[in-house]
Length: 315
Image: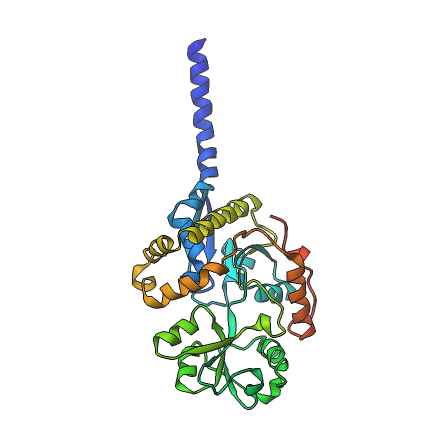
């Protein structure tokens, strides 16, 4: 009888092992918005320090060949999660893509309207007749136009040219008088390392509603709530570690890909990004999302007005 009990227990254990193993190794594919950089600090630290693993997750971090594709790949069920931008999510949802915001990575805007600090442009009223370089066409008329309006300048009073990703070099060379799309934690530091002092005008200080720069998005129809909850817990733990131990965390982050990450530009960007990581990735202010959507709708960037409650679920 005793042998039968032992045998039955062993059989039951053998049966359950695959279930437990599966539960401990839930795989999630995460596609970044761009190549790995300090903006992704909590993601890298969560993976390297085993915070994802402690939540039963195996997170496969991928870099996109085309930065415009990650949300589309999530919508097409090709990847589980992607890093995107709050404005882009609103545009995508208004266009009918099945996406939700599943967490926040960077909780403040990073984008700026940047000029060289050479006394030629001191405030927004000095932009009349100036040339602004942008990285890609999109909502620049609404955002730049709104900012300029606070300085008494019309969007029609400036010249807009697409300089691709050559934002810093276009500004430094004098090809343009200003750039839109330069991040406050990167382009300013890049210019400084090249001997140029930059000055930034921040959209949230000049009429544009504040928004979350980087967010995580998931498929609205297939997302795994439990997995996302664990993912957000790991990101929160990593962010706490980074804020408490910024220099040690930098060393661990830089070691992830030393050939591309361990340089002065990324180190400066790291220090400028620390205060912008979301301390509570899962927390959400629905009104903040609705306010920005209303801004986009009023500026004719989107043709329909989605409600945050429909694409920002409680997780």
